[in-house]
Image (cartoon, rainbow, N blue to C red):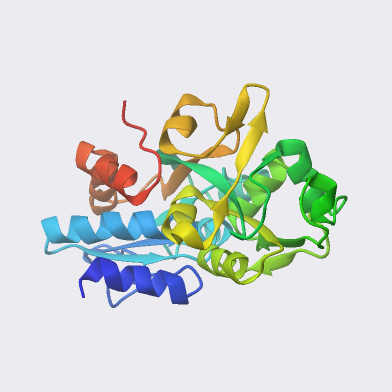
Length: 286
């Protein structure tokens, strides 16, 4: 079993966390360790980058840990990670706290992602509008028959509040309204897709890469737009046709050392962006 297979297994059984080396301390001077913490959506992608980078640079050590975008940004603020992987922009209160601590951030877009809305394969619904999704996830629509499906109660799944995907979906789809109090909060994207697979009335949202990895275990819905039904894919995210899409980000302390910069440069390179597409995310390369 190769290292990438092991990482994929770890992703499926853990709360969005992969440790690629045996240590998780911050990259202090004199250490080759680079630590990356944050977005669960990005764990698969970042661990794949790290695997390849370490193969090319045998002296390099990289630790990749999930836990949510908020966790990664908090770690940067506490000086306990080198890179915060985030699927959302930094919040005003986080920026204010950084300023109070004299911390300067560098923000880098390293890939793009579409948010896929997923249901059980037995669900007869194949497409929903953004407005229907808003009504479902805020709890105003509670039965599938209200949106053209079976007469069954909808089971709403959401990521936890420290997830950047949770924040982004709430801002774009719910238009900043609150999630229904009945939503079941999932600790990771892999646990969400597994729950959708197990419950024929469930609906949730995950990054495009996780939906692709789930394969036939879930059904990915098209989004109804004025120009027709649009399924999330690399092509529709790049073209702007798919409406639930976002940048994936690295936040780095402005005083980060050369080892950190070298890894980010690799992620942005032609080879690094090829990995983006292979994993199921959306490259920022032309």
